[in-house]
Length: 614
Ligand SMILES: Cc1cc2nc3c(=O)[nH]c(=O)nc-3n(C[C@H](O)[C@H](O)[C@H](O)COP(=O)(O)O)c2cc1C
Image (cartoon, rainbow, N blue to C red):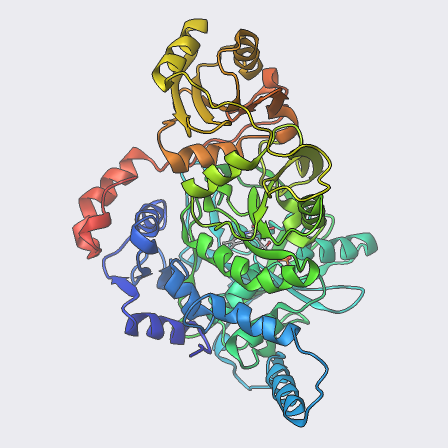
């Protein structure tokens, strides 16, 4: 079953017992974040939340609507997330029909596809324009805008579908880019430099022409998802939404700009961007779990705000995973597998572990047939669409399960040879990567953990003896080198290449390189991968150590190899480490808000088993 609009999705979620209503007044300033964060991090992503009374606004607010495997599948009109990808694969694998029955099947497919194309309709009063506010009547502050995290630069619209058109081709783009609300009729437009919205904008900028923009908030779930999907430039996201819904998205003309908007949306903002104007946007508590740094972004002037009579405001809070957006990313991971296998048929599966916050790490399994094939796949992915943002790529053989956590890590460590199977190169990075010495560009790590085939360039999987000393002795020996060495955790001691997680207390003089050199010089560890963490990190928390290692490391600067040892510096960096830009803080809600939410939890009527603060 697919939904025509957000109202139908809310009904569906309610019918499936996937939605909880909060009837008491709640503040949009940090309180909703604290509640949503606890629910999102509870078993399986908790339920969707509908706040019926948001202080300072008459609009109800929906959050966490996509935040579980079941809800994201429902959003895409499927029972499970593998199905849309399977449908896509069937279309892509269509052969030239030979028999009459094949021809009929092809026709069926073609008609099915024809039904996916967005349809411009002429309705005298489309639902999204039941209420129309123009010019001076526009007041964005009437919306239940969230301040998500304590150090956010202001209030943000966090789940908007932003429509623009290419000046050169006239083709539509829909992308999700957050909007910081500056006042009643202007917002920031936070499209990253690599995104299609930013590309369209540069066309207007080059001609010195104002750019028209429309934003839909609260659409049917397939449209909202489609705006987040990494489609190739020029491919209309509304076509993907139509494919997922199995019926066209109805589009109507906006009232003040020459763009079409989804007829069934809850709320529409219309307006323009003057290419000469920029304003400081952020900081914003981002999906990396850190604040994204403030920067200059274009300004969106809102000329009309239209909405349904009983519009629901749809939003999300992002932060350290798992959060709602992880499930949007999961949908992309599953849906785009058939597209990746079209380009690289050897790819059998891939995963984007949540601790890698989508752009930092991809695990890929391949059917390997010839030497160097993993490297071919790595370089291909690093040159392809939004996979090109990926900082660390690990390639394994097709028989290795990518969702097996510790077992997967064991497989990788038992297969790689530090000299022949690791590549460090450079390339573009996601705008949110804070570890690289400069924005948008930095080191990349490729790990070829596939088994050897005849003709592989160097001896693979060199056999050397496992470390024989007990973990406790090693920890003591390391600590004796310098009081700055703290806790030490050894994983996989039975392997030739064990993993050591070590806390260090950096000082002005003693940086990561000091601890690294000390360890290497003293030859306490004969072989292994050593990861350094700041002293305040609990190195026994698996998710935390992965998240820090994936986020805080620039492979070019922070990874060193010497013989059978590799060190990775996952501490925070600053000038003395060769990092010449600000380093963002972790997202932590205020103690006051946590206390308030603790005290009110029963009033919200939410499950008691997820009320404790995180
Ligand atoms: C909740 C959420 C918020 C996002 N916010 C932004 C953002 O502020 N800026 C941005 O460039 N991408 C953001 N993204 C990622 C883009 O939506 C995504 O890369 C999309 O494919 C961009 O579309 P485009 O390729 O058509 O530009 C966000 C994604 C999600 C799920």
